[in-house]
Image (cartoon, rainbow, N blue to C red; front, side, top):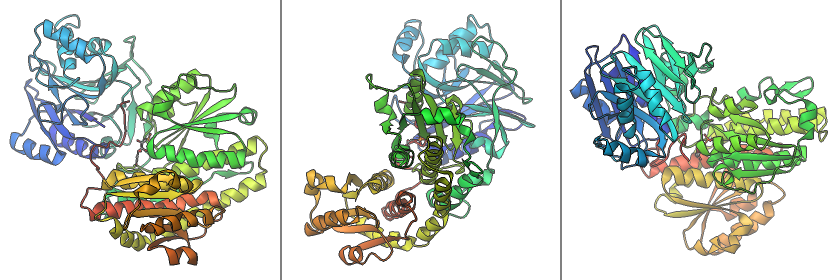
Length: 616
Ligand code: F6R
């Protein structure tokens, strides 16, 4: 979704703003813009629909001069992705410029009010009311104090926002504030920086400061940052954290795209996650912040997530129920939020799974669970993310920055993280002995090499991808945990290759989707060697009998599947059936990537999608 950057200091602002926006491209956007203010108080902006590359070209000829500025990548919500709707937006006097991430829910009534007072609007956005409100406050009650004017304006807003504001009357001052949308700031020798996530800041610092909702931060050119809370008290010790990865981790490093890099990074991600987790008394999971007795009392778990993370939740359910014998419900956050009749027990625990830690629906659901009295434990990839900060405990999967919009390494790392949680719970509630836990842990340790083996077979995916080149639709099938792999594979394929993919538990196929199958129709069947193998084989037969082209994901040595199916994506045998999803999914990630590339698409930045979905 939208990205925000801001800088004030001794350097020209435009080059870093443009670089910063480039690192935010991964969030998904459809227009971009920057605005700078010169020391003598001239505002100069450039904006356009399309990519940051186009903005760079415009900036090169416009040459905006100024050492303080703001930048934005916009993911359209209100108003089409056009030059006019791109941020920054100005007030009527053209002296105040604003970038905004989020949605202003009451913009229509504010706009009516402002128009009645004589303000003229130039865009279709919800954002444009903000500079006008700031101008009213700046020239009125705030008496030329930009930070106060921003606060007064923010007090009128309903919805979510991360704002960056500059003003021709205060050159060198950058004011930022947030509510519900992420925002971090940093101070360095050459000035102060702000951004909607740490990615742009990683090139200039390793230490960032977090803002809480309604905090207003004033950044000045000498690098000073003054943060005031909602009661306008100066925040003396704001939350902060170190970026635990090198800026090079967010670079492509020789790969042709981030998705390829991130798929390949999965073995190392799992190794990092597992390192040091087996202690004398079983799984070390201090992040849980619950005593053994409190954990043992948990009698129901609700997993909250969206998209790919929701698919992790489905596999986590299988592991928790099998190992810890605690019933689990997996809820789409967006659905859970509007289910008024949701029932919890006195000892229900909530597991929130979110790579970004900023997904609006997931955050709202987690808050609701806390409101219902549940302990909330977050599994996330982003240090200092809102989900982690608001949860009672948080486990960082340490997968490193995930830049490609389609989630891959976070999927498998979150899965293994949820397994660690399942073992910890099983030990606490007596459903596993320490020896059994240790055995499972050693099984997990086999996963990185199994993944490496699949990665070395990527030619199989490349070959199978040709089966999809000219197709418009496809079906993904699997049973039990492999049904989840099918869901995830279908999601990957549709999001980056724009080829319709529907996923079903194999046995359900007969109850509707089978009517789709005709000669040449592609079916992906996840059919590893497990207790439901033969059942899925029968479903494959049903597809073949109707002319389908079947691409199977099968375990080495499965002659039956090899003879039946047109393509086989082979996986090595896994020590536990519950580990198969973490290994087999790699084939489907690779397959989706090859299909998308064959069809000529940018696999890292699929259309309409955003990396971090910060609006409901
Ligand atoms: C798909 C994908 C999305 C996310 C979903 C939740 O590849 O990445 O489906 O999984 O938007 O995001 P997080 O995990 O950040 O809450």
